[in-house]
Length: 475
Image (cartoon, rainbow, N blue to C red; front, top):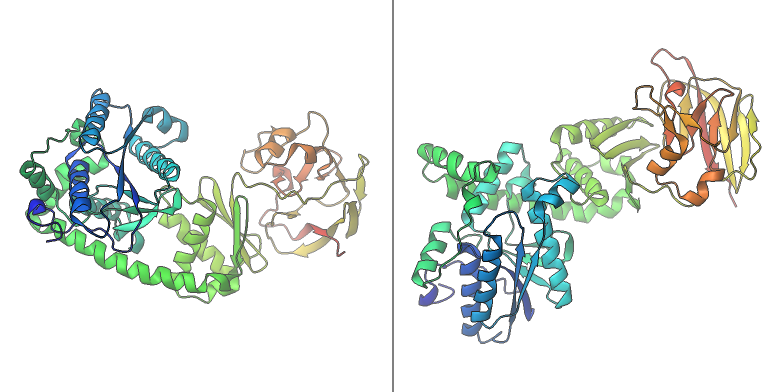
C-alpha cells in the first residue's frame, strides 16, 4: 500500500520514480477523480522524505459550456487555497473554439486544456503535468476505440506516462490509471472530500457517456469482468505497440527521411523491405510528422495509400485525409499538407516575354532552371515540378496575366482565378509575378509546381503524352 492507511482506497497510485522534478502542474476539474488525486498528492508529498519540497501548482480550465462552470472554478480556487497551493484558472469559450476548428465540443475542451497546461508548465519550469484519468476511463477509452476500428496503438488506451499532447518535451502522468472510479469515490468519502458533480457526465449525447451508462452495463450482463478485461487488453496492446514502436525508431534513419514545412518524404524501396505491420506504422508516423494531431485517421484511406505506395508507380496519389495527400515519385513517397509551402527556391522567369515551345527539347527559363519537354508512353501523373498532358505543342512558358482564370483539377470544370490558386498553394506574393505558367494560346495548362488545368488531363485512351519537368541546372 503506497500511501499508508490514510490512503487505503488508492493502493495503486502510480508516481513514476524516474520523475524527480520539483514542480508539477495538477489538472483539477473539481470532480471526484481530480480532487482525490490532489488530496493524495498533497499527502504523498508530506509523507515522502526524498521530495518533501515538491511544489504542486493547481490548474483549472473553465470551458464555459455549463451554467455551473464558474462555481466549479471557484471551488477549485478555494480548495487550492485550503492546501496552501498556488492556483491558475483560465476561462475559454469551448463552443466557439469547436466551431472555429471543426472539432467536437469534447475535442475542443481537451485540446484547449492540454495547451493551457503546457503554457502553465513552461511559465513555471514544471516539466510534469498530472491528470486524474482512472481505470474506468481506460476501459471506456479502449471500448470507444474498438468501436471505431483501432489498431494496436489505439487499443493500448491511455499511457500512465506519456508526452503531453502538443508539447512532447513535457511529461503527462496519470497516477490513478489503475484505480477504479468506485475506489476513488470511496476515498473521497473516507477523507470527507465533497467533489463537484458535473451534470454533463450524464448527457448521453456524448459518445463516452453512452458507452459509460448504456453499453458497458449491457456488456457486463455478458461478462461481469468486462472493465477489467478491457484494461487487460490495454496493458497487452500497449506493450506490443511499444515493442513495434521501438523497432520503428531503430530503422527510421534508414528510410532516408526528408522534411520541410508541410511535407515529409521517405525512400520507397527502404520502406517496402519492412514487414506489413512496420510499413503501416511507418506510414502513419510519416503522416504524423506532417500533421501531429491527424483527427480520426481512416484505416481504409491509409490502407489504400499503402497499397498504392507498394506498387510504386510514379505520379500516383492517394488522400490520407481531407487535406493530407500521399504522392509517389521516383522511389520516394511524399506526404503533403494542403497548407504546404512551396520552397522559396523556385523557377522565376527573367522577363514577361513568352518562351515558345514547338517540340520536345530543353528550354532555359532563367535563375538556373530548365524545362525538359519530352514525349512518353503510358499514363502517369506528376510530382511537384512535373506534369503530363495530352495537349501537344505549341504552348508557351509565360508569367501570369491580370485577371486570368483557369480550371483546376477537382472543381468539375469551374474556373478559379490564378491569384487564388497561387494563394491557396502558399506561393509567396513576391514570387508570383514571375512564376512560370505553361499555357496554349487559348488557356492555361499548368501553374508550375502546384495547379494543373482540367483541360490538360490525360485520358485512359491517350497514347502519346507530353511530359514536362522543371529542373535546376548543375552549378
